[in-house]
Image (cartoon, rainbow, N blue to C red):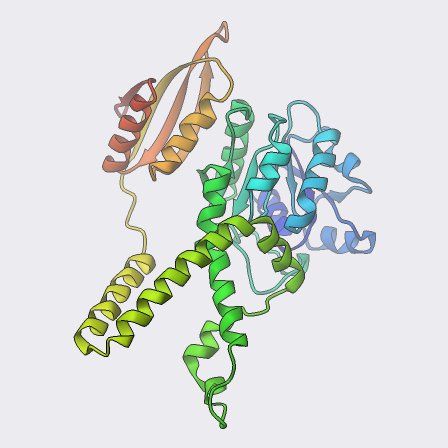
Length: 357
């Protein structure tokens, strides 16, 4: 298999390193600045470098676009134009709706967002284990190729990550709260002012921790906030309502009521930070479907909305290609039952395969 990595920095370089060390693909890279090409080869992130996007994508099976979100539409279009018909093109951007709207009319494009990174940047800091155990969101649409979605999901899993299908708009609403909003709060706290003549606020650990990401990479975050402005603004308005409620509770000067509010927040924080439980046994579900566009994406997105994580999948088309079976593997008895009910609710025939069948 040939993998093209467009943009070989920390993220793209780590994909290349993992793919090469695991024997998944021949990796061809491309960078905007030709003077960086030698470093990409020397670090082992790629087998070789290409002089252009077109050269990198020629005969590729998978293309990964690794650029700032503001440049992904242009890069994605060039990659699709240069890639063969049987190639899947994806990306690693942290916002998805605008990108998917721009590119997903081509069945070969499936958006992606790995939840992994590091404080350092550049291919010199790339790591083959960066994606080990990390959640990697995929945003297929009803027009996505099922075969290419299957290939991409398998590739992500083989990198050590956990692929999860999600609707692009739902993805952006979620990251607005869990990722983008904390940056908004950090910026606000940092610019709110320093109380007291002794500037005690500058010494307070809570303020120091709360403003750690304030002002992070203005160019990158300018593009992130711009491409996800609707979801971020909605999250800010929800937070404003929550702060108004907090002001009312604290303004009551009622210690018991304030303590209840504080305890409720502590409980929610504990839920957020609780480690995921052991997954348990893995179960195979076999789904009989007709051969029509979007079936696999429909299943993946529905299971994602139901909170079911697919650990693996395979496609088994009938000889005449009119129908086929999709095997899905999910972990945990409860998850398997939830998945079975979800798939049945979509009108598909689904059976749980007993071990040894």
